[in-house]
Length: 578
Image 1: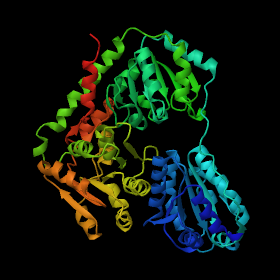
Image 2: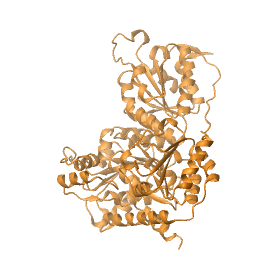
Image 3: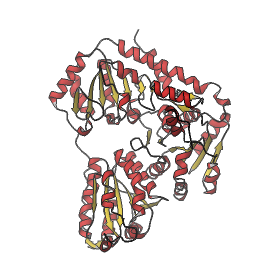
Image 4: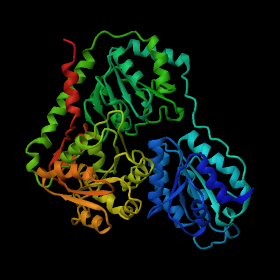
């Protein structure tokens, strides 16, 4: 049966399991929008900016692991998409972007709204092709969708509006492969790794997002070689909870004794991490091994003594029979004690008289949010100081999800990501930890939340400041400039948009008012006025940075409390065998 390419595309996407397309209607996209209108089982989620559409699709894909779809019309609609697509691509979210184009006969003439999307999206996609006929588009759809799933990233189909209206023969849906093999490590390389482990007196494991699905193996290896386990932010939700070997996180958002554990060990094994901050990684006097299923990542941050291309779980399964169990816990126990001491020493910074402190300490807000949120809540976290509070206070448990713009590092990601998480997970609590800077950038998406009545809780850390930018300036010895701005009443703005809102300024009422807002059905904006002086330094800084900060400002810098993680650290120390 002959149907238009647009109808074929929408029907196939639905049959692939896609339930919604995020975008802004109009122009060359109209044939596809109309096909959604007439097709049961797939919906159009109208957003206010295509950037938000791409963020939302990326978030839905990250939670579900399935293909998610966004769309943009020709010209500006395409260029708006690119920010969110960069974020999805760099974080490995399988997203298909439909980039509609000007009429095919006008391409190359400087026509109204003409861009070259097949060039524009090359850097933020694994697949980007322009469709030149209806049948070509029908063939390309399967390739684009399969590539996004197989390579875990973005595919882009560029479709001129007139081509979308061409007729094609609609055949049976081609099934997508959704289960993929895992990379088995080379046996000889595993033997070399075993030799390094057996020779080392002390071993530290450092886990990234690649340890997802390998938790049991990582903990078994830690027990066998008595190794402390640190993590990057990407690995936190998979390895930190209920971990008797935990020594915290390294990097700019880090805490605890992870940095020391990596620099004091004889051998450090990097597990499924592409941690970009090489200055926090050991580079001399420590043997370093990296294990990763993506061979292109091996050794691109620091020189390695051994590179192991393999799935983390499969690699450790192959390694454990070759490992000689270590008896001494001396190194592990020393680092567990350092970790507990480091956390205990900074927690008082936000707990002392915290219910009397105005403006409210943001750490207190994050810790209270962690306490009140559902066990399976999804948190989306804005780039900036919200990253710090999310990293240090939101407690993983194996059911919660916590993510933000970990690799692209863009502002304004949390709210549109929460839109995608809410749309794809009705009935599950979704909390956007938004900075006032990030929310201000894509504030129009409040209207999207209202339009679709998404059960999204938007917690605004409203300090009238770009806190992370301020910190960057201060550690460089620069006076902060244009980082502080007039206070904005986001609660009033949300109320004007028809969203239930609450403004919290009294720390004594924080728990009660925040708890009531989280229980409210439907969208809620929670505007919490927080202290702009609450900045957080990384666990390890250079003397130059310290001098620069001292020269530039006398503001309070908190080491950063870590909520329930202190309890776990104390438990781990108490459980050290006597």
